[in-house]
Amino acid sequence: MREDNRALRREQIEAAAYALLAEKGFQNMSMLAVSKAAKASNETLYRWYGDKIGLFKALIATNAERVAVRLRAAFDKSSQLDRTLAEIGPVLLSMLLGDRAVALNRAAAADASGVLGEALAEEGRGKVFPLMVDLFGKLVARGKLTGNPAELAALYIDLLVGDLQIRRATGALGPLRDRVIEDRARLAQERLFMLAGVS
Image (tube, rainbow, N blue to C red; front, side, top):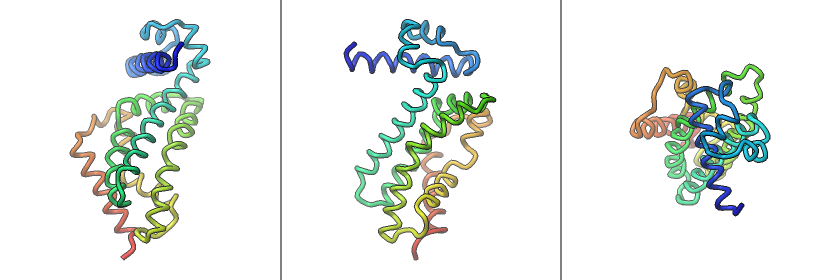
């Protein structure tokens, strides 16, 4: 199968998996149901993903890579670091609170074994957080902020996200409007600079 066809097929399979994940939850989602919904063979799914856990890890990896691509694009677009932070805040928050991230978080929270949560931390945070640390390292090096870049990145994410992810995952909070996301990102940046900015 050609690479572009394979990529399109993967997108179709993963879209079907997300739809079933949202409808049935991880425990009740089967590889057979995904293959039927995606109009793919069950053999293809097992060959590409191994099993349901492998499929879940692939969903996480794809979602994390989408976030990373958008963050890198924001880094490349802006020459001013504080402007870069202002641009990536809404991107990061939108992705973390999006329907796909919510479906993944719900599945991980329902998994008593902890395997899905571990995969989510490894693939998700493991790919995105280093990008944030790199940005904060540059902000510290240029005298905009003071402190340890990893601690500053963690603080910023805490200020940005707070309890919104868990509230979205539990259904206590619906999707946020773009304006609310932008305001939240601006406020997180302002508070971070109040706490760790160089005067």
